[in-house]
Image 1 (cartoon, helix red, strand yellow):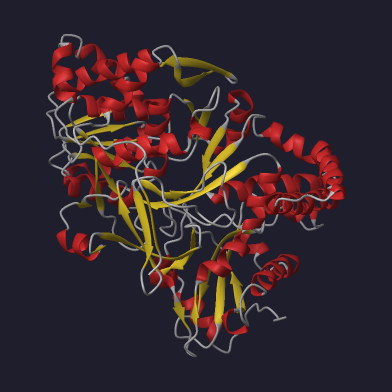
Image 2: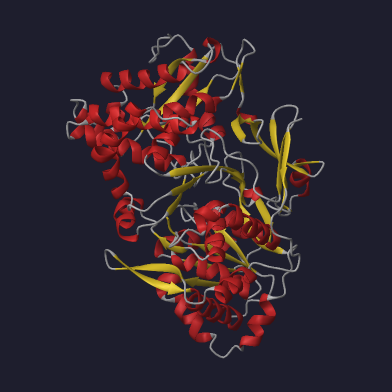
Length: 607
């Protein structure tokens, strides 16, 4: 059984809680900017560590004045914004527990999380959020106070708490010990009803303190800053928010991804936090923009050179001719792409799905090292991550200090250490099933190389067994196909069937540009494009390329382009844009049956 353990580099403190992380930052650098909030189109106003602590304390007083008691749970339904982290820390300072809810959650999901968690109050951001909550409010008798941010709730709470003494907040913030619950985060529900994960103060404190040391090149570089745009309701961004506060990284927020490029240009972050789909979009958009300008061939040559250059760098030797070729493309192509991303980005932390070696090498050649990591809600986000100096493209790195990884006999990745959650809320059966002799069973399959770098190869429950008995990991086919600019999502099917097939959705954003660049009618909608011969040929090329990575028995023989999309609203994607495979297989069972019946279907030729 392969196993690796990285000892903690910071001594554990069982008495510490998350509030100590902010107190420590203010003590070290009281005047350093911890946040910047937008003012107008391109201006950002800094908020110092001391100013943030003052606001946190004032809001905590407001919660106390409103009757919130230590240990009470407060739901939070809001987009990624400065106030999210303000509320997070204020809740901790008041001795309470935050229960985050994805801003895209449906009324039924909101009802489940609030009722199952036992939340007694709710903070929400917008009229739209209130409307969704109001739809299920009658089913939530335990919810007393509801504060609406768009109606000035935060300022009203601060005013109402003005008479609460500082000593009461200091008393409350010191009530929790490391073993106590810090937050209750619900899983995204990709494999069923969301389960509440009890994450402790020690989970955040020990993981944060150890990560700050091991990722020093990222979070302690001069002028370190980051622009958060993925949802802070997800454990990935939530942990980074805590890490940046502790490390003194200036953080800005932009929840509207349509304004992301503009915000990157004005904020100039030094590192980003993103899921692989974001990097795919950046690359595909740049490629299609070049194609539209008649420079598509140049861009593709530049991209090939970038991958070749990065691969040579990784091997330790770059031929002189390659250096010259790369320098030319760096001036013509890559410098413009770096500028579009703000001009200062040195690192990007990527998680939730495999990035793919080609994209990893492409961005590495641009001077942006993508540090792929791996984790789940149950591991407080990162269990493993690549380090700045030893990043190994194609892996998710070794464990963070204080954690261990082992590969079970059946290939399942198991985790033990400071990052692992305490239990599933009110679900002892699920908790017991999730552990193997103290090791958390992740449900993912992977391998460890000789240096302890983890490579994720698939999801245990998603392994397809064909009628011929061949085991197929969908991810090996889906990830490279999804990198194509036309592809929105791809779901490989074929369990107990004679061969492997795929359901494909088109990327609505990229479709018009691709159609125009390829001499097609750019006004086609998704349903019309699904039968367009040029589209079918392009998808076939993407599938043929993916098939070269696997054996003939594992290759995709047929595919169907759907005339619809997989979205959160349709119930087919999680908030982090992972597919809900079970729901898709159920809802598109008729389409799948049609693939294997003697009915016409789009098919791919095999090499």
